[in-house]
Amino acid sequence: MARILTGVQSTGTPHLGNILGAIIPAIELSKKHSDSFLFIADLHSLTQIKNATELKQNTYSTAATWLSFGLNPKKTVFYKQSDIPITTELAWILSSYFPFQRLTLAHSFKDKSKDLKNVNAALFTYPMLMAADILLYDANYVPVGKDQMQHLEITRNVASKFNNLHGDTLIIPEAIVNEDTKLIMGTDGQKMSKSKNNMINIFLPNNKLKKQIMSIKTDSLSVESPKNPDTCNVFKLYSLIGKEEDVKQMKEKYKNGGYGYGEAKKELFELIIQSYSTQREKYNYLMDNKNEMDQILKEGSKKAKKVADQVIKRVKSKLGI
Ligand code: ADP
Ligand code: TRP
Image 1 (cartoon, protein in one colour):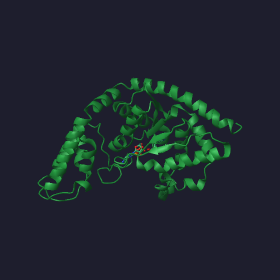
Image 2 (cartoon, helix red, strand yellow):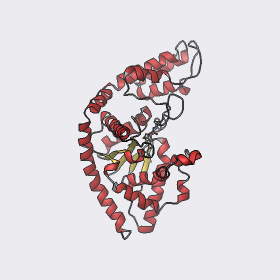
Image 3 (cartoon, protein in one colour):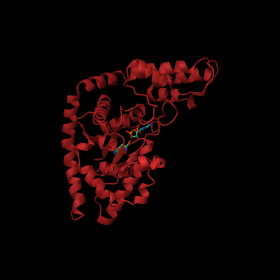
Image 4 (cartoon, protein in one colour):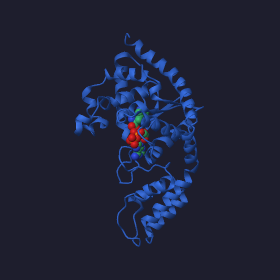
């Protein structure tokens, strides 16, 4: 049976890019494949966050997002990366099989390497921890956004290097990337990202969420002018969430003119509020009942550990340790 696995860092509240690009596709897949592992990559978050209260809060908001979007912890193994410390052991082992030179080319490091004095060693070895996350559970498919494809290539590569030396030991995973949602743009027209101030956080109170949506960058065509829906981020987001008929109608309004970006943004705001009302409610409920999440994650970690123990045993048996 094919196993799917993916993780989201706890570097903040997951944004619409994370939700459309990774969380919804992963949950949809988990409904199809009965074997799924979904987790919170809190150790990866340490590369950015050093404050305990903040990291804990982010871990809860990440867990609440997964659960509010329908992750079923009875069917999916849902856990926190830091609860399985063997992950770091496997990451160390894998690092011994991967060339330093190749790691210098990883985007996670390269993008920040202009300012080397602020790059910590964990950011440099980040892809090795991610490879361990995946290989430790014999994952076959990993649903991710476009930005993670290079990390998946590194994972496949290090697993092959290990297998070539020691015989088949690790499963070579495949990335699953959803073409429509692999790269969601933020309010500034760049990739939506927790580290940039360009997020749409659907869990914010209405007035704050509206402000974020109203700040989406558009061109400066007048209300009267016909507009191109295909180059507009407001329309793009609307089309990913809205019903086919409503999307068609908005498209017509863009083309006909007499319809301003302000109006389109208001419609997007209404759509988000409507489409995600259950999720927003559940999210708030869970954030007020964190003990429920603690319990769910604890159960999940127990199940994850069972699988991880078997795989690390297999790996170590090849190494004389
Ligand atoms: P961020 O880059 O915002 O810190 P994460 O690193 O936690 O987010 O990403 C978690 C998942 O969400 C990954 O699978 C990643 O590819 C996906 N993702 C992140 N940003 C986007 C985006 N703007 N569009 C589509 N998917 C995204
Ligand atoms: N690095 C991923 C990101 O930034 C998060 C992540 C950590 C992950 N480990 C993973 C994703 C394993 C998929 C599989 O988005």
